[in-house]
Length: 182
Image 1: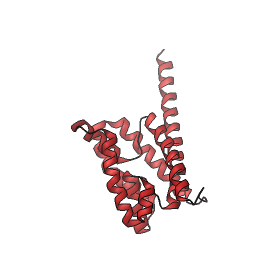
Image 2: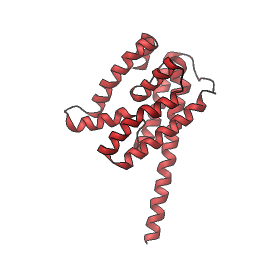
Image 3: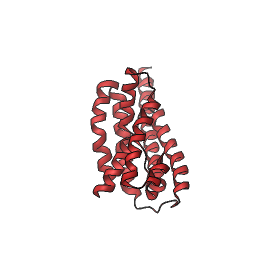
Image 4: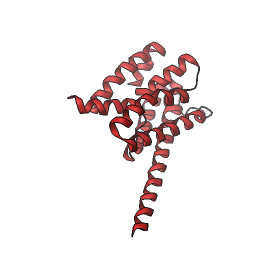
C-alpha cells in the first residue's frame, strides 16, 4: 500500500512539473511571438524585465530570473516552499524558452491581433501553471501577501501594480504600446 501511494505521489509530481513546463512554453509563445514583436508587454516583473532588456540590450531571460529572486525569497517566507519552488521552476523554464523563442518569426506584426491573441495565449499558459501550484511572476506573490493584510483582492492589487508598470511602458516604448498592453 505504501509503495502505491509513493508511486502515485511521484507520478502526480511529474505530471505537475510537465504541466508547468507546458504552461511556461505556452506563455512564452504568447509573449515572444505575439506581444514583444509588437512592442506590447505583460505586467508585473515580466513587464519590468522586458523594459530593462529594451533599455539595456541585456537578455530578458536574465532580468526576469534576477528580478524575481527577491519576491521568491519573500514568498518562501510567507507562502512556503512548495509554491515558491513551483514558481521558480516555472520562471526558469519560461526564461529558457524565451531565450530560444527569439529565433522564430513572429506570428503577427499587427498590434491589435498581437494583443488579443497574445493575451489569450498568455492566459492559457498562466492558468496551467497556477492550476499546478505555481506562478510566473513575483508581483503575484506580493499581491497574495497584501491580500491577507488589506481589504483589496489579489486581482485588484495586481491591477494597480500593472497600471503603474504599463504607465512606465509608455515612456520606454510608446503610449500606443502601453495602451495595447492593458
